[in-house]
Image (tube, rainbow, N blue to C red; front, side, top):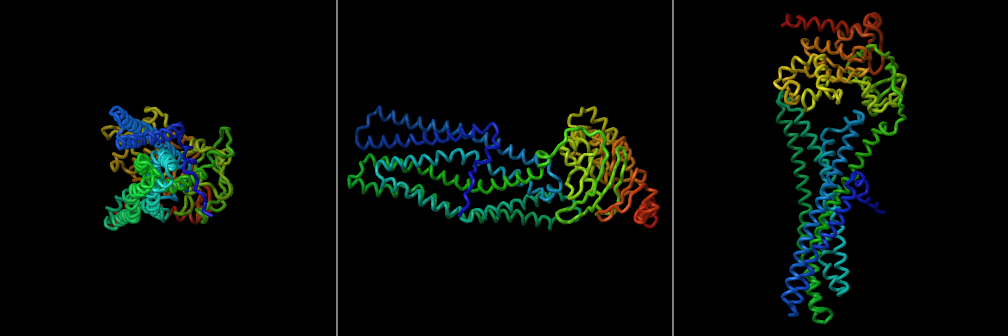
Length: 593
């Protein structure tokens, strides 16, 4: 048995907000406008009958013409009002869907977001939602009028003569069958088109983001070829779809308006047999012509409804996915008791990316106000462990506690208020430097922002720009060095003033000249805080309270710098390698040139 399709309005109206009544009103006004649009046809039928019967008075002619013009004017006014209301409702719904998706994406674990490309996310939020505009603003509000009117006309024609009614329907039925060919394989074509579009969006984002690398390694031809292939694929897919639809569409558009070719012969035969009068024949012909436009519109809407049927489950599934991944925001056993201490404890924590476990049975305590470094070779699980504390992902097994409370008992707002996470990836938004720092505390005054910038050693380079703090960070672009960008990010953390600070390779890409300034800024950020830092440069963490050496997702050793030198061969080799590289950078390398 064929599965019954869900009403396309179901669920969507939930996003209409205060525009729900307006959308319903638009449907009623649209129906009334279609009815009003039929007044001119009725007037013309009466006028032609009167002229043929030579009983049409001059005053009645003027009255009928005035009624026809009035009907047309009322139709136009009602349709304009209905369209305005339906568009307001449509854009409200689209805005609310996009805002819901963006709001939930902001709360989803980073691991879940990173499973999708930027192009896929952009395609869903921008392109897919945009395709809802026509069905919401036109097809749904107007379909009632364009469906009911032909039904009413056919019922009226049946009262004249059922054979005339059937004849008037002939072209519509044949035209509808021709149009229906468009829907053959529509679902598969739509799926392939959307996949091609998503691939193109992802390629465009990748191409633009990687432009510097493309130019640096002279990969323009190969990278552009990938971009070109993606664009051509969308073009070919679109043309293939259109070529497949054009014959059916052309045939339908040719057949549907030709109702007079069916009504006139049948009507003449009935007239000869005295089954209908001349007036009834003329009325039937005019009314049959009048419903052609309504039926053509209905078929046009049918195609857009098919798109709607395809998009609605996809958007609904996306919303369901983000709702599922953010259930901790709405269904957790949250405790509304403020945390008084910020001790951190990892209790037998294991974590797997998909099915590959990367952390194994980690148990670790970090007392409040102490500093801890996570060290070890690349891939040992340092960053993963830190990100679990910030709930970028949730643990697979075990639990993480802050102040004795399970991490999952905190709302996202509570957690983000407690933890400042500073990554090696220094992302700056296309806003002023002032606003980029203010992200740490959205309600901060300008004076508070500037104080944080001074403490993070930012003021010196900010003053180089003519607009100072008002300089757009995107416009500043490459004029900001890696160290300067890092200091802006640290200024955010200073402004936020969270009790727990995580520094994930915060000085990984910083030149030696800027490293001292960043270290000074870090001292300010972490003063009286619970600090967790990840670093490859052991000299930056050797004086911290405890060092945790990770290897292959396990804790291989823990202790102070001196203790690890005595007890861990791995740490001793790492320290010797660090000393060698430091000596080389201070002059050994230059001497060998």
